[in-house]
Amino acid sequence: MSITTEDELLGMQRVSKAVAYTLKEMRNFAKPGMSTKQLDDFGGEILKDFGAKSAPRLTYNFPGWTCISVNQEIAHGIPHSKKILVEGDLVNIDVSAELNGYWSDNGGSFVLGNDLNNHNVLVNASKDILKKAINNIRGGIRISEIGRLIETEARKSGFRVIKNLTGHGVGRSLHEAPHDIANYYDRWNHDRFKKNTTVAIETFISTASNLAETEDDGWTLTGNKGGFVAQHEHTIMVTGDKPIILTVENEIWL
Image 1 (tube, helix red, strand yellow):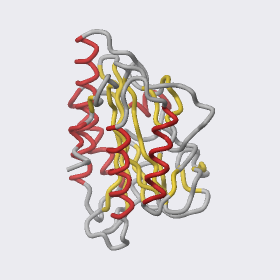
Image 2 (cartoon, rainbow, N blue to C red):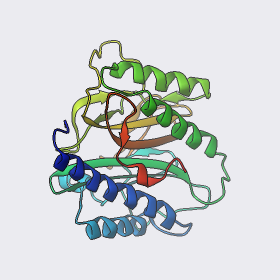
Image 3 (spheres, rainbow, N blue to C red):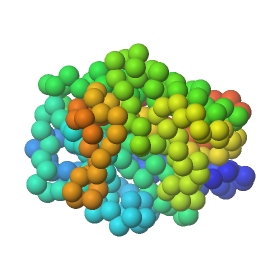
Image 4 (cartoon, helix red, strand yellow):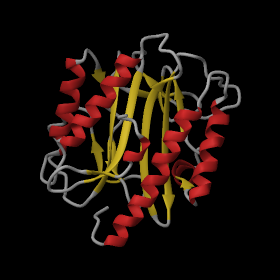
């Protein structure tokens, strides 16, 4: 989406605030012994209070208000009453929604309670790499160069990236052009970021796998070589200088 009016910017700010606040509150609400369905229902009520509609449910009829992935799950985890959170779990929450015709997307991985399994090194790498990537985005920059940066930084940290999950344009729908903001250098992608457009930038930083595969439930994604993945995502507006981070209220960098 290209922002051309003040009303469009306000619309994107409103829906971005809804998803960012929901993600922050879900992260704070999560506790050992809680089911992922309880956590999802909590998030669903917050979106409802904003007047926002769950994007995955609206677009794909996803069986949850949000996606909650635990441990070896990379993304699109289905909330379930029998999936109980445990101290030290690596948890990823992805919240996207529609509000008054505008769409926004954000997500983040975190360790539940004490870091019993030493996941925070991975989580912090994902956060830091996303920040560096976003700070290098401006109108005219090749999308592939941001992918190169993400993969290079992941390797420096001793990790790799998931290559078949990407960031994307967002605004008038959940997924729109550009569709392939990859986490690696794709030499065939000659597209550039365009000033005043809104995009969702996300990192998928991995300990072992480089591809995501769909489980038998038709939704949940896990790695082709096992291990763990941390994901972080912001919706931003590209400018001629530093981007405007529309979902900054999720506080993943605090």
